[in-house]
Each structure stands twice: as C-alpha cells, then as structure tokens.
Length: 91
Image (cartoon, rainbow, N blue to C red; front, side):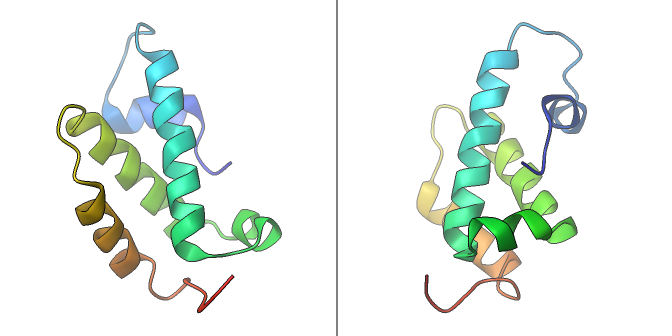
C-alpha cells in the first residue's frame, strides 16, 4: 500500500475521524484502480513509489470530490495519461 489513512486525510484536509471508513474505502479503490491501469505485478507495483503514490492520491481526491457523480471513464483516461510511463503493454 502506497498511501496510509493519515496521508489521505492530510491530502484531503480532513481533521476528524467521522469518515475514516469511507476514506479507507477510497484508498482501497484507488490502489486497485491504479494497479489495474499500470498492469504491474504485485511485486513491481509495491516497488514503485512517487508517481504511483501521486496517482493514488489523485484518485482518492477525485473519488472524494465526486462522491455523487464520479465519471470513472474520465478518471481512467486521466490516470492512463498520468501513468503512461509505468503502464505495461499487457498483464
């Protein structure tokens, strides 16, 4: 895992614990989304750091901001552009 709950809360500027469960769900979803887009093996994925972390944080922010109307196609296209240097051709 590249992003902890504390890091996500700091990124989202959340100071209270009321939504910790929701934010953890965002983290889990973001990690899975980024892993799927990069097509990296689990070992390769865990070795990557800065760009992967940035992509996960971006995804968490997007999911938080667009809770009611997230456009997952738009999110995927943005992540593909952001992660194009890390994305594998195939699994």
